[in-house]
Length: 140
Image (cartoon, rainbow, N blue to C red; front, side, top):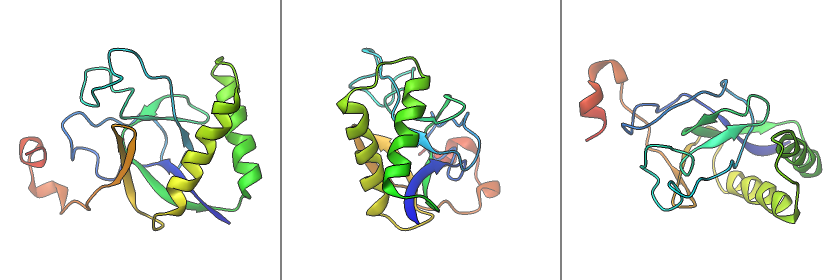
């Protein structure tokens, strides 16, 4: 059993530019980051603040730590296989990315909701009952 990072819709809307196109609970990985988005996590594209689903290859800005019945080697193989399916070449950096994702999860509690900004994972604060807030109030 290991901790991994998976997609979640929890805390969506906490930032005005959140999005989630990955099914709940799908393993996520780093994706391609365009030049326009590279230094600005709030740019229009969103690729520098999101992770992509292993299977669906769409993106989300919210993810959580989950426990899965895998070994680290199995996880790394799954990560590399998912990357290979994107059509980009598999390099030693692909395995390094898998390690970064793996170790980012190990330092967190199961259920922690994360975001990725400026090449750093942050734990998001739990949101109060969302139904009592408007979109504008949530993004202040």
